[in-house]
Amino acid sequence: MIEVTDVTRVYQMGLVEVRALRGIRCAIEDGEFVGIMGPSGSGKSTLLHILGLLDEPTAGTVAINGIDVGTLNDLEKSEFRLNKLGYVFQDYALVPELSVQENVVLPAMARGIPPDQYRKESEKILHQVGLGHRIHHRQYELSGGEQQRVAIARALINQPQILFADEPCANLDSTTSKTILNLFRELNEKNGQTIIMVTHEDWHEEYMCRVLYMKDGLIEGEKACKMRNSEKIPV
Amino acid sequence: MSGHNFSVSFFLAIRSIQRGNRFTFLLTVAIMGLVFVNLVFLPSIISGVVVNFNSQSIDYNFGNLVIEPRENQLFITDVSKVKQKIEQIPGVTGTSPRFSAGATYNYKGNQISGQIVGLNPRYEQEVTLIHTKLKEGDFLAEGDTDSILLGTQLAGNIDERLDKQDSLGGVSTGDSVVVLFNNGVRRTMKVKGILETGSFGVDRNGFISLKEMNAIYGISDTATSLLIKLSQNGEEEQYKKALMEYGISEKIQTFQEKGQGFVNDAIRSFEIINAISTMVSLVIAIVVIFIVIFINTINKRRQIGILKAIGINKKIIIDSYIIQVLIIATCGILLGVLLSFGLVAYLTYQPLVFPGGAVYPVIEAGPVIRSIISLALVSLISGFIPSWQTANEPILDAIRGK
Image (cartoon, rainbow over all chains, first blue to last red; front, side, top):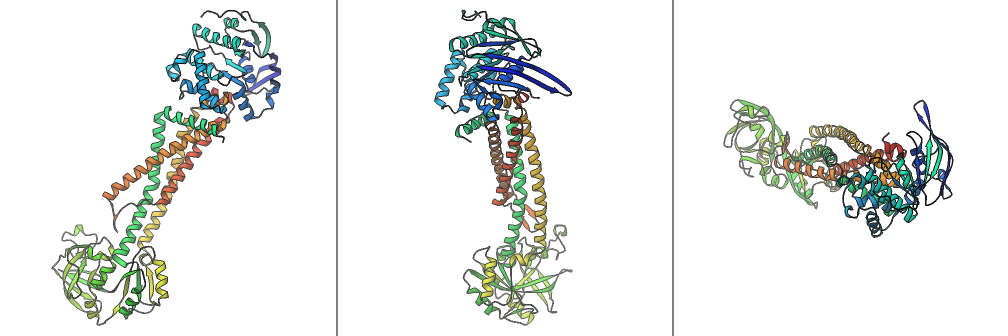
């Protein structure tokens, strides 16, 4: 469970102070697929980065499973991200020198998982995301959707408690976006994977179980999901 | 570093080299290779000059040690006794008494002042190698009278443009030269051979038998110097002490001490040039290698940010860059070693000609080890600083390339 208490984030841009978050308070339960939506500049990515330990709040606390992550040092945060969190970025963020499988196994290698085990696990996940036939390919040989699925597989290799996705479909066409969103939904429903996803496409709402609406650095409202437990949405 | 952390660093480093920008890799390796050559080449030439100077001094000028008259004395008397005494010392393989005096040579109107050396041809062959360096004619024999060997620079050439300095104008074997000794004796001597050793101290002199020299000066069993050859080079100081212990009371000098002056000054100057060149090379190496690796690392800021974001700790990231630069440095050093040996092979085949003769580059372990350590250190610093800087940036700044 994630508990966010009075989180503010102020950026200094030259002489101007930008208040990206103005006192966020929310809670996300285990197993939820939560969307964060809102117009540009509303603070949704900032919130996601703070929840994902990629950034630090100016004030307030974030507790994940009861741990106040603000008290962790650099190395502990790194370990926490490696062991408990997974990330999917808008532009895939793969390591171009690595093959599909190598990209996926990298976090598992860093955890010290034995090679046999991480290879087997990566093959399983890559099959799950529909890339079983592409494991030895390189990034430049893949389409945008395929690259994003590699990023998802990489995020899942260490079986994270929470999967963060920052506009994962921003660079994808609607068909590919649906494939990715169906994959997220499947992970959430079948495996109980907690997913927190930033998006500004209204039609993505139907894949989520709850949506937090943000405006001017505050959560303006929230909406329960429409399609929870429904059939897979056709691509 | 734990085992799996190292294996991740190593894995990332290897993949980056295997699949990264080939041009950057080859450029960096080539720069390192050339810097290595630059660091090793000049010292190898200086070593070559030293080796050349030493071997010429031993083989043609002085042997390993030279005994000279005591202070305030002009000659070594009872040379045969001294010689006998010295030859008892184990490790001494030969001794050769010499008698040097000033003389003026005349040939077809050309007059050159210089030195004339009286030597015992048999003993001399046990100590020096001048008998192997005849450009023409034959070496002296013990009973030779009115025969002289001339150094090639003294004999000179008919075409004076070929002479390095004033000469007798092209004396050949069989010609006669008039020698005026510094005691006033004048002799016409037949040239038995022309010596060409490459050593100025030999090629500028005339040589006659010691027997004849003694006769000219009306003395016997007397020398102005006694040359000593040892079974092994490099033990001169030890033998100098041993000779004193054996009761040799004359002045004893090693070939290095005898040769002090012009060559040593040249070597000292060379060493200063070398030190400056090494410093400049290293600074250039540091700057160039640092810039290339820095730009390469900075270009990967975003990737470093992403690696940190997915939980790869910064030590793994920094180590992967250090491993990369060490691999690049190893390749650069290997290339440098190959290029250096190629250059040495070429210059051994086509040696550089210095005033003291042909100089062959000599690569010694010292400069090579120094260069390897310097390049490895430079690479480490160049790899560590930018990767450390980037790995310590806030993750989002690195990802956004701010």
